[in-house]
Structures are given as structure tokens and as C-alpha cells.
Image 1: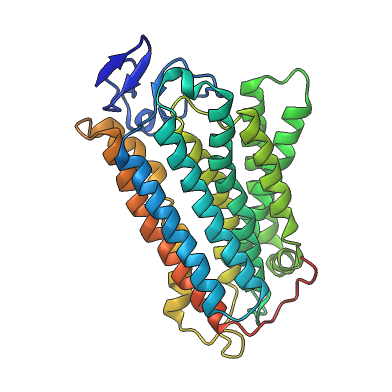
Image 2: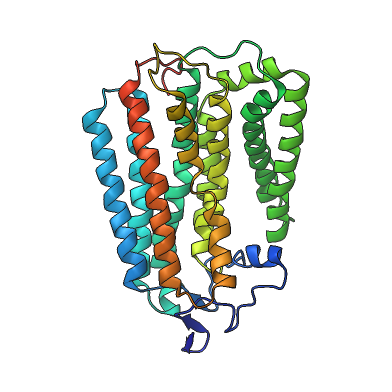
Length: 350
């Protein structure tokens, strides 16, 4: 690694300059999450072509996917949601690529222009959560369901909603409290999530059928409220970390709740040849595709802390290749669903 201009770090992203990865495995998994609030005292941000070129290639791939869905699928709300999701993916990597290409100094990354551009990048990831949740709801209501869901099925369907609502409520209380500092706000989100988990799992265990019916009747606009709060946090810097790439993982973690809701509700769906003439493998591959990007939140810090010989550009390029597979599989499976869709929707006006 090379140290330039005081605290600016370039090149190898290892812990060997002035960034300590930690001693235990858990510390090494979480060292990247150091709050910065868009005020960086060192630059750990790659500017090589390995990073921004693969960003741009992935963006073009997603735009092509959106165009493919638009051309090959009949009009439906599911098609519109899928196109919007793929275009948001494209927006996130196009803006991220521009940031990596043009903001090369410590002064650059501390500028308002960088904060604005990086907020677009991270905000596109958080906003995608709405469309994932809305797609899950659209698929969940499109056909018959098991009449007597099991407790595990009810928990899988209900708990993500309750955790998201708990986080939303707890976070709003923390943000609105004048005496609640930065750590307190984070703690309020965690506390809300834990309370939501307990309530969701508990009610699903007591009344699984009622919980499932409530979730299926719940408007997908709850995810719009959820991502709106995340958007405010993104712009304000509450999701900003000293290593900007970590912001994406924070946003992706939040995106996990609507993704789990999609997967949970889809376990309730029975095979229906009238609505979706697709195989069990298609159903499994859809959930696999939606969850495929999740391991990156572990792979990234493991690469940085245990493989110091790898450059940051190489690590970023590897992550982008993984995302190409994950998002490409999402495009392929959602396009298959859009093509097989019979236009049923019980969610009018959304």
C-alpha cells in the first residue's frame, strides 16, 4: 500500500497502513463498518479501471435486461416493477462507477459533489427494496395459497414485515428524540428490529393463519415508507462509512427485509398452472436469485482482512462479477415470470 498526502490511502486495501481489521473473526467481519457521516479523515476508495469499468459494464447489462423485459413480456404491473428494479440496479452502478473514476483525492471524497453522487448510488440500492417488496406482494397474491399454513411458513412470511416495521418505528423515535445521539439512533434501530422479531415470531406461532392473511392484505406501500426513511438516512450521512463501499452493504442489508418477505410469502404459494405455468425449479431459482448477492457482505471483509495481496480494484471487480451473476439471474427469472404471468393482481391502484 502507498500513503499519499497525509492520511490518504491508495492501492492495497489491507489493514496494514492505519486501518486495524481486528483480531477475532467477528471483528474482521465488521471492521469495515466505521461511521463517517460523509466526513473522511483518510481515503480508502479505489480509482482504478478494474472498479469503474466493471461498474459500467454491469450497468449496461442491467439496462439491456430492462429493455429485454419491456420487449418480450406482455404489459402488467409485474413487468413494470421488474423494469424499474433493473434500472435502479443500473443507476446504482453507473453513479458508483462515476464516483470511482472522477473522485480521486481526499478533498474530492469530502466534497458535496461526492456526497450527492454517492447518495444516488446508495439511494438506488435502498429504493430497490421497495420494488423487491412490491414484486413479492404481486407474486404472493397471484394465485391460491395453502389454507392452513404451518408455523414456520407463517414466521417466514410475517417476521420480515415485523422486523422492518420495528426498525422503522424504533429509528423514527431515535431520530425524533433531541437527546438521542448517533449511537443512540443506531441502538434504536436495533432495538426496534429485535422487538419486531419477537412480535412477528410470537404472533406467527400463536395464530399462523391470521398472520398470513394480514401480511397478504398488507399494502406494498409499507416498503415505500421503509425505503423513504432509509433515503433520508442516506442523504444525511447516517449510512455513511469510512470505507464508502461499506455503505452499499448497509443499504443491501436493509434491502434484505423485503427480499426475505418475498421469499417467505412465496413459500405459501401452491402450484397454479393458470397463473404461472412454471416448474418447481423456476420457483426455487427465483428465491435463489434474490438471495444470491447476500454472501458479499461476508466475502468483502474476508477478502480485505485475510487476503491482503489482493488490490482493492481486484476485490471490487470480483464483487461486480458476482453481482452480474446474481442480478442477471434475477433478470432471467423475473422475465420468465413476467412472460408466464396471466395479469392477475389483487393490489389495485398501487
